Length: 140
Ligand code: DAT
Ligand code: MG
Image 1 (cartoon, rainbow, N blue to C red):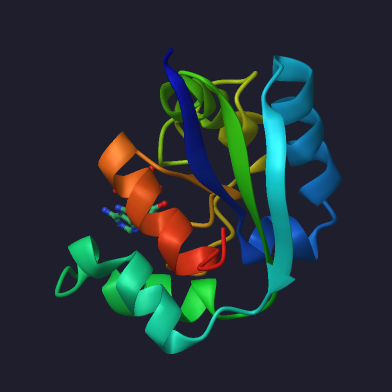
Image 2: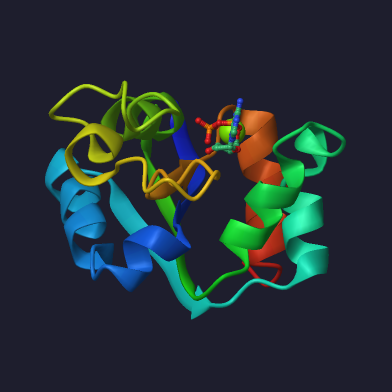
């Protein structure tokens, strides 16, 4: 069995624009299962742990400010190879370059805020998924 779980976040730009349902629709129509859902405005400690790999990078401050700017919808999804599969649905990091058909390409854009606002987060490996699910859903 290659069933996996991945952490998905509808980031503050997506949540604020009412795109949570659209993102969840794409996950469900792809065939992945929703295991857990939670709406919250993430605090600094949670975000610092989540983005620990980016601490010290030039965009870290902007990233933290953006991610704490409002509610996010956090989800755990499940399915065979859903980690890579959701990354493919999401598209590349930069929403300007992300191709049409992808979540970031269809729904995201540069808003001139100096932060990369790209609608969604998805875990990038099984190790990351386990760590991130533990942070966002400690009781799962
Ligand atoms: P991804 O979200 O595609 O996994 P990542 O983990 O490398 O990308 O970075 C996390 C977030 O940080 C990303 O969604 C947007 C922001 N970011 C990444 N690289 C950036 C850069 N070079 N300049 C500005 N923001 C960046
Ligand atoms: Mg990442």
